[in-house]
Length: 496
Image 1: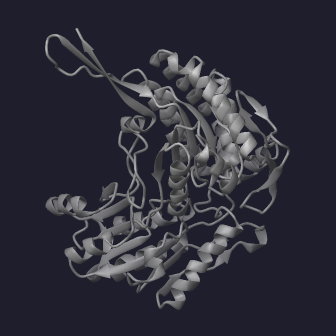
Image 2 (image 1 turned 180 degrees about the vertical axis):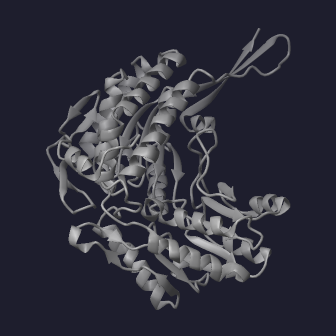
Image 3 (image 1 turned 90 degrees about the horizontal axis):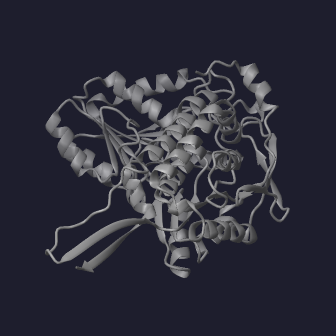
């Protein structure tokens, strides 16, 4: 359990080894010597000088992964043996849970309580899930004529390039790395330049857990250089990316310009959260809406940033959310009592403030928040923000903000609610609050989203797939379905 005080977390932070390196072929590598400063959004202080990888470092990591796949033991191990290695890695993540949570909190501003209870729990559970699943998959033998035998086998796809974002640096890395490794692939992982430190520690722990050299490599650097090099590399067979829709388009171009590698994308969202007047508990619906948009500082691709609420209950629900925003404790991420930490950095905070300014100028009503706070800390803190009187054409209602900014829109009937919900280029997630079972089924089917939550939000576990429709991407993370991204189907036909 999370039991340390703020001062104890602060003391531990000063003891962390956050030196920069790449982790390639089972060893720490300095790369070409170029570095950049990793800055903590909690106070603007430099955490570490991080190795700034480019084409040469990506080439070295991909070469190591290629050797490990083509000639190494990993793809040829019995699936149960790969599973046991992933379970050892899960155990190491659990053993280092305190210091890993601290690393995540420092590098991206997440409250330490969330980093420990949610981020690290998810990472540990992901490696355990795929470690246990590794030997549970079966091949197929379709019924054929008596003198014929057909076999359909699922084989590892090869070298996987995984490019992951900063908002859940270990969780989303785990969602890519664990199923890829379980399938027998080797991986080159590139974390966001905003959150490189936790991924580097994951690479070290994988080697400590006994994964052979080259099976999991970690290269740090920026997207236009290191990310592009992975996307264009002819020896990368599969690309798995989570991030913005704009960058996802680049990876599709990289695949077209190189070896037509498969590209799996989990992209942005502008998720609707529909509250009908027959919601089983309006107070709970409002509280959950507030939690959903303010959790993780609103830096969530699934954040319910468009609240669609029936006109008859709109003011009651909005007032409850505004009240909760005022109660929310914004503070130092290392304080266990903090409920909302810092945004990931000054550049991102500036983008969110620009959206807020545009919302005001376009005529939306600012009900609370909208300004930065705790400026004396040097950190990138923003007050929880709520707008109402938002119309569908406003930028607030159309573009992903990726911050703690809620837009309230109203509707008069169910058809209007569904039309508003689907009036977006995104299709990642949606919420619905109703007491009517038929409405729940019918609206859930009508919503163009990869996940629909009914009378809840952000619930689920590793047994269910996660991913988007439309410009929110393709393919699925989590569940056994994730293995489909990292395997190839081979048909063998034998004439007996």
